[in-house]
Image: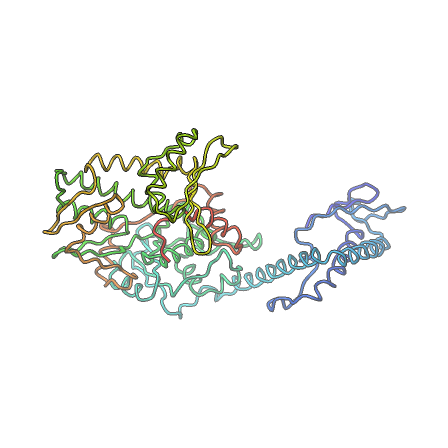
Length: 537
């Protein structure tokens, strides 16, 4: 709270009876509103005056004929009669105001309840942190399997998703330098949880216990908090499944470390393991693949050994480049089809319509006629002049049973990166293979590519001939030897170091995506939804 108080225009730094009267009046006026509200169960002590005043800014000025000040600095009003007068006048006014503006009274009451819940949580957290038994519980399942080395610079801690994977990691590890801490299920989202809930969570307590640094609660000035010098491992490696659930668990762990162990990130001690998502088997050879991007690269490599195009002699390098361009074309096309009909996009690409074409009505009229020829009778094609932009917009309306779906072709669409890049890709691809359709052969099979949409798909099919693709659902599907070789062996594994380049941006992103406020997260998702690739639902 910030309360500035004055007596006869002289500032009373230490407050006094006029401030006490104001505080009492506010509490009395708000108690009427609070009496009609249901308080959370954890608030056994009820709402206190300090809860009502949290975040309050007020200026109190009184005129007193014969002021009496207390203390050596004469900065505190001591007249007892002033307290009663201020309490009565302010209290009556607030009661009347809250009666007329109940929604404001309710908002203040809700804020006071939040403050009381936070105060109670902080009290419980202090109690938990002061107990001698805090962080000493080793009876829970899935606890730390430590390493024999004691030099932190040589030690690694793997925080592993799932007890099954944790068991495999314990068997496959280097016991001298690698410690394993399996986690049971998803940990608490610390961005939403109160500190007492965080410190009561078994999985989080086991993490705090394992790393050895303590945790900075910031509850009071005497809080010993976090000590980086007590860190027992200079490589803390988060190891979760390579799928979307694993990414979620990794995000929860990153939130924990960012909020309560930021120095571990700042010192470069936090890493994310890169377990394989796929295993490919071709003949007797096995290849572990990290993600979809690497899978595509390997399959294209296989395809380049097998494919032969009719009437055009391409090297392996050219086939790889062709597949890369084809994939980019397919991905960009899919992004456009989230907003436009495929038939309309295909027609616009075939006609190679450009932004400049929309400035002249005669040109636009010709384009509309050509679009009508390419689209079926289910579409109504017309144009309108936009006086603000000073150009014409083309509309392709598809008739539906319960209305119309409008595809608008304007300068925004024609100057978008996706559309302009698709035109470039058309030119680049056709400069390599010539006109479509084109025939190709692989492993005594024939295929025909009729359009650019199917180019990458056809090359992919050629590449996976004779290849077994296994997608790992989790780390637990790998045996100890496989887990060691793919994810834990320092000579063959891949680690991603967690760094902090922009603290303000990181703080904002964690708050939006992991916090308890839904609206900012909804806005974020709506803003970037159309840019999503490889959505796993």
